[in-house]
Length: 113
Image 1 (tube, one colour):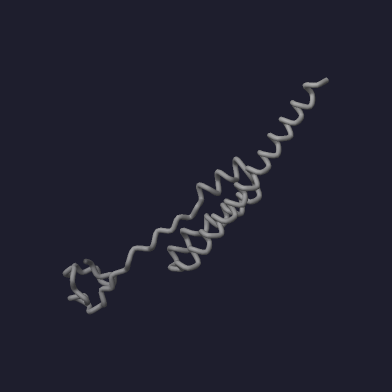
Image 2 (cartoon, rainbow, N blue to C red):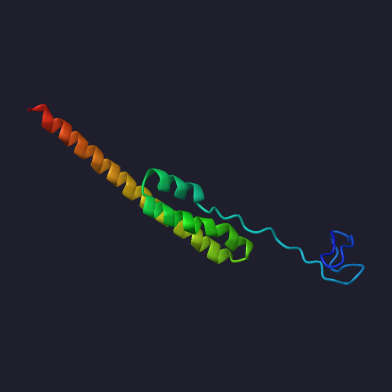
């Protein structure tokens, strides 16, 4: 382990630097939080542009928030990205279903003419 203050090599199990006395704190790796960006992009392109774009904006903020150390904030942003994306997916599928039913009704209605 190297000291972050002076760069001296220290034992891996040491608590302080042998050269300068700086505390050797072990920084835990940041938690991996799924930002739901892929889902938001798919919803934006295929289903519902407005809801998908909101999901993309929230998802794009997750990784920077994790790096800043705000895990709770990052989880909330990821939750909002997923929520907006799922709403967009539902609205998009509902719109596609209605369109299909109208086209089917139109096709069946013109058969009798």
